[in-house]
Each structure stands twice: as structure tokens, then as C-alpha cells.
Length: 289
Image (cartoon, rainbow, N blue to C red):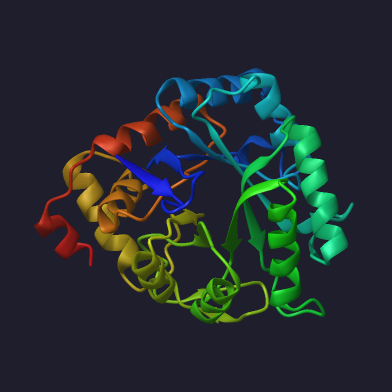
């Protein structure tokens, strides 16, 4: 199962539909070095060896921890590997997450990612929106497109957006991908740190309409009444974990979904990879509706 990012671009990217998110490779609170560094490196190597060629990272994971792990484990990178990073936020010493999204901030973040990932160009960058603030979306996204013109970014994506923000982004230029919280039990309404409602299904519908892959993160959330019960029931019947069934549901829900389940356990990684082989019937999907 594959999909194409930016299919109408001369620099389109074809990726396997099951990726890997590096966030959990860091220490507690998404901060500091991994508890088991050799295992973290082996996870990255194993994922790529088993066909994963889409890896999500950010320079504010750690800080810079996951980028450095990627270099240590995989550089020089396989030719077909797509490394996707995020900008728009940073971390304070107290581990809090704060906006870092002025044009100057975004340029600093891109330069840092290029340096730590040892790349001449970042293939895909998600501009993560951190809620309302003094820097409007058009100013943030305009800076991203300028960096793209300079050749520092190949493709621009958006993260943590609602349908209105995605529409606004599309009016400004090509949006290659969207990265949002989305999963079986969290898809009707999403809320950011400021309590704003963001439509999960509405964003997916827009992505499908425009041929934009939606990269779901933090997808196993029991946020809807009784949703977790159905997932648990069918998982028991099929002899798989709820996490595996959630991944399988995402892969069956839409051909534009590109799950990136993360883990700090090599055994759990193998379970996640095996989820791609789980077949769900039309009856299964109707039950999980």
C-alpha cells in the first residue's frame, strides 16, 4: 500500500502507507535522551528494513534528540526515505510547548533541521499551528513558501488545522500534506490546547477532495462514547491489540490516511508493522462506524 505526496509536482514522493513517528524515542515528557539508546537506534533501522519510508520528526523533540538519532541510525539515508519534520513550536527549559512561528523563527527552525538532519533540503515540513496568537496564518505560511522558493523546503504541509485553516492554506499555495490528531475514537471533533474545536472528519474530507495525504498522530484516543468498547470487542475477536486494530482501521478508512504510530519498544514496533496485514471486511468497518 502506497500513496503519493504532491502527485502533480515534478518532485512527488511515493511512500508506504504505514510510517513511523519518532516522538516516543525521547525521554520522559518528550525531553532528553532515550532510556535505551541502542534499542531506539535499532527501532529506526528495523522500521526502514521492513519497508517504512516515511518518518516523522521535529527538532523540538528532545530537543534535537530524534533528529540526531535519525542521523546516527540511518545516515546516509536510503534514497526512497522521506523525513518529515515540523516547525512552529519550541520548548522552554520547563518542558512547556510555546509558539515559535514568526518568519525569523521559522527560518531558524528550518536551518536547525537542515543542520541536525544533515540535509541540503528538507523534503517535507509541517507548519504546526499553536492556536491564536500575534502571527497570522498567512504570515507564517508565506514564510514557509518563501523558504520553499529558496530551495530549503521541498514540500510544505500544515499541522493541527481545522477545515477553515486548511482552506485558507490552499488558497495561498500547494499544501502537500496535513498532520492532525485523528484516530478511530477521535474523529468527530478535535480540540487544541486552547480549547478550539477542529473538525476531524471535515479535514479528512477536504484532504480526499484535494488529493492530500492526512498524517494522523496520537491516534489511539478513547474520546468518543462507547467507541473504545467496540474497538476492544473486535480486537478480542480478531486476536489483535486495540492499537493494531486502530492502525488497521485507519488504513481501511481512507486511502489518503498515512498513520505514523510511534513506540520506544522494538517488540511494539513489530506489532505495529504487523497491523498492516490485518484485513477488515465491510461488515467490520460498518461495526466500527
